[in-house]
Image (cartoon, rainbow, N blue to C red; front, top):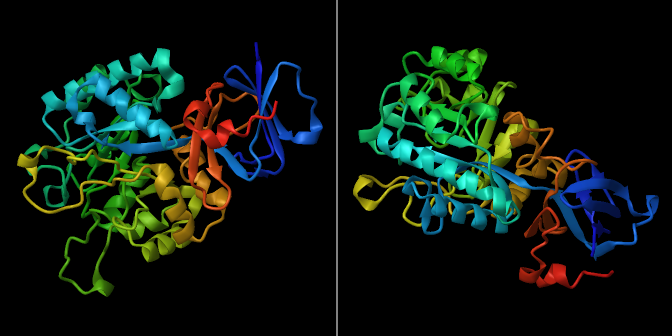
Length: 400
């Protein structure tokens, strides 16, 4: 019986450093060695794969997934959410936050309960699914003028009693939840927003801003209170006075870009944000505070047809593994920096940097294998499951 698995010859992005001609030795589901190939003799019971000309990275973390293919988070069906997790894993996303968008409290509670059930299902099949890290509640506490694809009928004022019900339904608060409520996105200009930020922080929930017409001062106050993430930058961020000349507008993106305390999510699909704007944003914000997100939606969007009263973007059709090559090309950053935006950075934002987003000795096996030239996702690895039966390119690399 083979006890160890060795991956050799690849470039490992930890992601803060690059190890060339590397060896990663795995025992069951843990990394027992990472370094250069010449520094260690392999144990006898080792299955070896030659990953020359490939890159090994930490698994990708997506903070905003509304659905995938035929399945939606708001379906409130656990097996549908597990199917989303399976499809995400095949495309490189090994951990994610199922996202509940603005809806009735009844639907939000049903979806929260379904996410908890889907998370419980993952105990037995964790090697074949993207891990559910918790719930991202995007809305319904938005400025009605900036709701976008979120149905206006569900937009309402900040109400912490709703948050308590949702947290109870999905298993608790923050990192201690099972899986728990991990992030809440709201418009920072709403009444009681500063109190709301502090209330969320006390429960280890990440306060996130978005869908906003707030002034730079309002956003700054929210950040100073503890807001730490801005969802899908440039989308649903607008000046209160859109008729004013550009040089006189107080655009909310000004503070989002310049404030070093704030992480910012960007959908680099060429539709939500143009390639030139991606480059400009990365240059001004800096890659250490940027989180690549997908904002994935199902084939039917966020909601059934009856809620579509206007033509607006309803999220992306590309997974993180598919947008990474675009982001690398358009941003102008190096491979290490690009990969960090969907591994290290989201892990740090969620307070999980010791468990996710990095490859070190002792860490759990949670990897992506990429093409060295294009950063195209090839396969994902958890435990010792390489999915080689589904990936002939990897299967052919078995050498011992």
